[in-house]
Amino acid sequence: MASTGVDAPGRAKIDVRTLRTDRWWIQPLVTFLALTAFVVYSAWRVFSGQYYVFEPYVSLYYSPCLVTTCDPGAIPAGPISWWTLSPALLIAWIPLTFRFTCYYYRKAYFRSFWMSPPACAVAEPHGKYTGERRLPLILNNMHRYTFYLALLLNIMLTIDAVAAFRKPEGGWGYIGLGTIILCVNAAALWMYTLSCHSCRNAVGGRITHFSKHPVRYKMWTFVSRINAHHMKWAWISLCTVVLADFYVYLLASGILSTDLHISF
Image 1 (cartoon, helix red, strand yellow):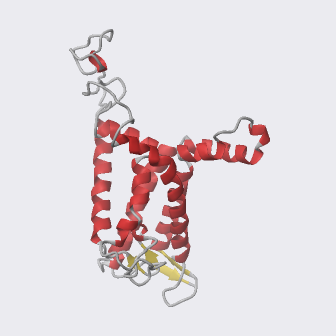
Image 2: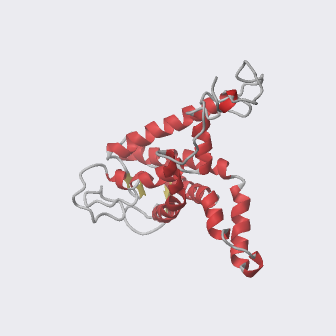
Image 3: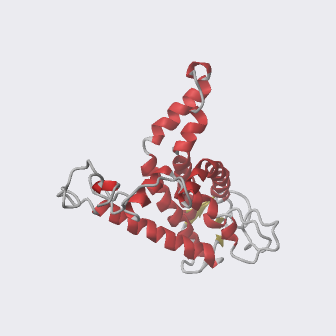
């Protein structure tokens, strides 16, 4: 008999894994399929190293492009000249690490991939729990630092969204379907990032008296309100990331011959 977990001494002796009669397995299954699809898609796009620019659009996996061999239209280009692999590998690790260490996503993949536990009132198959005190899970403590990197990346993606209003021939006044998608994606990413638990701690943590910090208190109350919807923004932003990149890919690869747009 195991000395830890659900079979530990003093725990109720139940022969079945759970007494739940509902379809509790649907949510972890859907989460598993959705996150797996996202990882596969992201790996394909990040390692491909092509079809990421269609002026005035730049794929968010490749922005900012830090190598001198960036496709024309990527902003900014350079200054790294020695890099020979996909330019996305220099950037994409930031949002991917930020999401992988996110408190919500940790709960999501702990339940759906590792079944720890798969659902409320459902026994997990593991005999013991070691927490996040050793490799590789101790790296989840990087979340508070990747949060600040994600903020910088959001600024760049917002610049890309604004730049999507540029006319290819010069000047401003271009509004295409891609312009709308990039703007929606930038907004969703800001909501996801600002609703992060690390953001809530950054603006309101380590304060003894909120009355002495009225500005930070207002920021904390705002972040606290949107923090309640962090899971929703996690999934919305995940979908907009894929949609934005895939639309740029369709245009850059020639699968779509033109971007639906108006110019004034």
